[in-house]
Image (cartoon, rainbow, N blue to C red):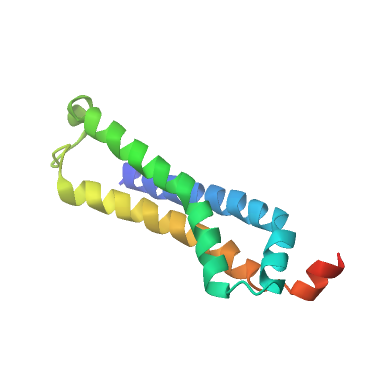
Length: 124
């Protein structure tokens, strides 16, 4: 029960950290986003660009974390109870949970960035 609570806390803290970094970088790029919108960039393409650039570090972390967990499976086996270290359901659910947390942390600032008024940006 305690390990589950700490794991949930770790996922929440990592999602908050990803959200903070992506929100900060999106705010810093407000002028670029406004210029793209003023030049006729579609909201969908701007959203995809922001999501891809925000989710790329998350994706790299997921791949590295998965590779480390697979390579250290024998050493972790003594810490696991009633679960094998290479259980595909557990690994897939962990990857899906971290991916969903990272994607949602990237989506919120990206959607907020689409509300930038191009005219105000061009005046600045």
